[in-house]
Image 1 (cartoon, rainbow, N blue to C red):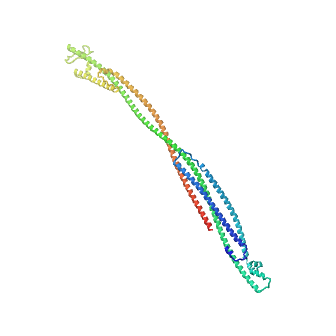
Image 2: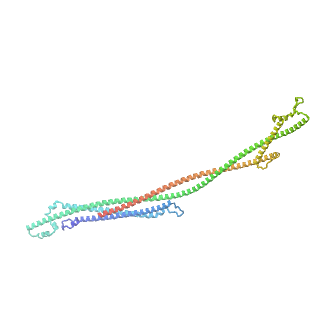
Image 3: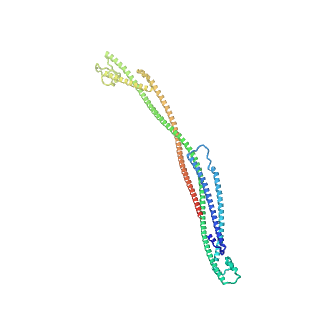
Length: 569
């Protein structure tokens, strides 16, 4: 549009403000383009600084995560050796954190200064542009009102000399040259024609001027529309930039919080690992104690078995002692019975001897009576009291004691009775021999005497000595058994005390083993919990990295859109 207006014929009727307006529009456009370039460069610098800050933080965060993950892997592998102790997190990252914080503070200060300078320049530029636009609008309205009034067209035939002089040309010069000549009608008609032609030319020029002004206004409206769109886009970009800066600040805060949480978790992990090592040491000590307790339980079981065996032996010995006591009592009773039987047999033997003597006397008397024809009268029978009857030759008169002995032998003739008495005597002798044999067997069993006494008189004489020896042996065995019994009772008491002590130790060791198992279960649960927290933290770190990458992509996309908008404008 400006080129069309410039290529028009040189008509000097145009007022001077319009070139000023076009110049101000061009200046405005140049200022707008410069401002957009400044804004674009500022936004580019801001985006670049944001990307650099995000890249630095992502590098630091990834390095921190890598070191933390390697330390966590080494800590999970359980390589807790006796080497150099690691430096804490605060000492290792203090210099790097200070450098990064100083860089971030300087970048934020520069960014704030740039923002303040841009805002101030933008305000000044906007005020200047508004002032210039207001002046241009006032001038345009004034000029348009001046040239659009109807009186201007009516006053056209009566133009002043200055106006005609300004229109210039040969006609004005000719009129001025012929001013002093006489008035010619033909000349006046030609001048009128020239005037009307000039008027038509002026109208054409005015139409072209109005067309150019209209086109300029349209172009100005388009430029204003573009300016408004650019302002809207700049405001939107500023809003997006502010949002991105807010998101970056939020992400920085989140990263700082995550770093603090990671340091806290790492510290807790170190504490938990130390506690785990202590618990492992305690567990090994408890396992050693448990093994000792198992060994003590095994020894206790062995002692219990041995005590049971000793108790069995003691019971057997007690039964043997009781059996021996019963045997001794039975032997004592048997010895007493044998003594009584011996006394009885001695009495019987004495009676037998007396009977033998009496029988021998009776036989002698009978033989003497048969020789002399005498009848034996029992003792105590008074003379003349007994009715004497004629006795047969087979009947013998004996004393009353002999008659009682014969009556005890049974009925029958005297020979039969005497034979029965002899048989009874033999039976008694056989029984005495049998009892003596039994006594000898008992004597051999207890005193282990191999010699046997075949002579009856010798046996009768040695019975008392052997009985005394048996009593001595029995008393000695009883004393030995009593000593063994007391010793066994003492051993049983000692074993019971040992058993009670071992049972107390076993109960304490069992309680300690149960506590160690509970502690081990708690440590396993704590370890699983820490592993879950570690996995959760790693998942959060991955999400943060993905979010960071997404934001970087969004920044690049916004930068590309910005460049596309600038290229279109």
